[in-house]
Amino acid sequence: MVGLPYDCLSNPLGAVRLTFEKAVASGSDPASFEGKDWGAADLFHDFLFDNGGLSQVPMLNPSALKWVQPNTLVRFRGMIQDMLGNEFYVGAHKDGDIWRTNKFTDTSQFPMAPSSDMRIWERRLLYCIPVPGQNSWAEFSPEAVKNPYTNSLSPQREKRRREDDATMSDVDMQDSCHELQASLSAKKMREDEMDFQPLNSQKTATEETSSNASLVLDAETKSFSCLVKIYDSPESNLKLNDVFEFVGIFTFDPDLTADKDDSDELTHGFGEDALLHLPSSKVPRLHCLVHRKLAINDFLSVCPTLELKSNAVKELREALVGHLTAVLGNDRVTAQYMLLHLLSRVHARADTIAVGKLSLNLTCFNKESASVFGNRLKLAIENLLPFTHYLPLTVDYLNTVSLSPKKDYNTNRLVSGVLQLAEGSHLTIDETELQAGTLNSTGVENASVLKSLMEFQKVEYDFTYYKMEMNADVQLLILSEGKSNLLPADLILPFQPSSVDSPSEVDADMLKTWRWYLATMRSLPHSIEPDMQKVVEDDLVAARQADRSLGSQDLSRWLTMGRLISASFGETCLTMEHWQMVKELERLGRERLHGNM
Figure 1 (cartoon, rainbow, N blue to C red):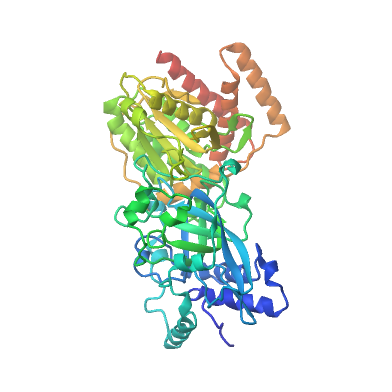
Figure 2 (cartoon, rainbow, N blue to C red; figure 1 turned 120 degrees about the horizontal axis):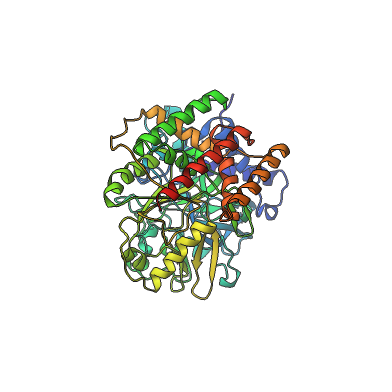
C-alpha cells in the first residue's frame, strides 16, 4: 500500500494543497470554495478522530514553543476572550494556468504576480487564553505536550519530511507575513462599532490584568494567548467565553522583528488594526481546521468506568458528603447544602430568572474561623472543580478593582474585568475582611455588578455610552459573619462546626472519581411526572398558607433543590423520597436561621 504524499502532523499544508488541487482538477470553480470546505477539513477530521491522530497532536503551551515547528499541526485549549472581527485575505490565485490556495496560512505558498487572477476570502479572528482560574489538576497531562518528533521519525519518513520541507520552503515563517500581506492588499476588515453584537468584542483578564501587555505571551508568568483564525464556521457556533479545543496549523516566529518597538506598540494600544499589536513574534497563530466545544468532563484526566447505577452513585454521594462534612468541622447539614451548591447550574432562563442557580451564603464566619474552615473549603473546592476563584472582599478592593469589562475607545478593545469567567466557574467571595467604610463611585458600581451576577447571573459590560448585559453561569459562595448586606444569596445558612480536627487526606483516585461524579450528575436532565407535580404543588400551597413570609423565590428554590437532590442520586425524575429530603433539609436550615437570630 502506497503511503500518503504528505504527513498530516508535520506537513498539514501539504494535505491542504493536495486536496485543493484535487478539487480544482475535478472541475470545481475556486470561486465556489469561499466559506466552504473542499475536503481538507474532512480529511483532518478522519485523521484526528477516526484514525486516532488526535493523541499525536502536541498541545500548544509556553514550553511547547521551544520545540514545536511552524506550519505543523497543534492543538490549543482555551477560552474565547475577544472576538476581533473578520479579516480579508487572498484565498486563491492563479500561478500561470494553475490555481493555488493561501487558506490556513499567513503567507503565500507560491509567487504571485500583482495582475494574477485572485479570489478574496474572509476569515474570523478569535483571541483565546487559558481558561481563567483553571486548577493545575485540570491542565492537560505532560504526555499531550511532549514533542512528537523526538526519536519518532524513521529514516524514510525523515527523508520524506526533508523533501516536503523543500517543496514547501516558501511557506517558511522567515518571510515577513506583514510585508507579504501588504503586497497582496490583504487588508483586515474591522467590524463597525454600531454593528457590535453581545458576543463579538470582548477580552478576559484577572484582577491584575488591565494593560494591553497582558495580551501577549509571557512564558515567565505563564500568561499565554493564541490568535485563532476560523474558517467556514457560522458565527453562532463560537461565542464569547466559550471554552474550545482548536486543532490547526501553527505559525509563530519569536525572531521576527517589527518596524516599531514592541513595548511602544503594546503601550499605545491597537489603533485601527489590532493585529499590528498582536505580532506573530509575540502571539502564536493557529489556523483552525477542526474545533470542538469543551465541557467540564473534557478536563477530567481519567473518567472512571462507572455506570449510573443507583447503588454506586449513592455510595459516591455518601463518600463525598462525608468528606465535605469533615472539611466543615462535622457540620453535615452545611455539607448537604454544599453538595447541592456544587451541582447547581443555569439550565434555563425565563425572562430575568436564571433557572437552576443556587448561590449559598454561609454565615457565622469570622477572621479566625475563615482562616481555618474557609481555607479548607477553598482547597476542597479547588480539588473538585476545574475552574475556581477566590475573592477577598474589602472596601478598598471594591473602590479600586474593575469587575466589569470596559471598552477602551483609544485601543478599540475591551479592558477585561475580573468577572469575565467561563461557564461552570466557581467563585468564593470572602466578606470576613470587610470593614465599615465609604464606597466611591467605582465601589458602588462594583457592588451593583456583583449583585446582578448573584441575582440574575448576568455581567454588565461598560461601553461608556451604553451598557450591555451578558449571560453568565457561575456558582457563587459567600462567607460572612452575618447575612451579606451586599449580596442576596438564594440560600442563607449559619455555619455550625463542632470540631476543628483536620480532615484525613483523600486518595488521588477518589478525587478523580468525585470530579467525575460532580461533572456527570451536574449535566443530567430532569423532569417531574404529573402525579409528582401535583404533590409538589399541594405542598407548596400548604407551606405558603402556614407561613405567609414565604415568597415565590423560596418556592422556586425548593424546586431547584428537588432537582439537585435527584441529580445527586443519579436520578432524572423527582421522587417522593427526594422531595421529602428537600423539605427536611429546608426545615433544618430554617431552624438554624431562627435559632441564630
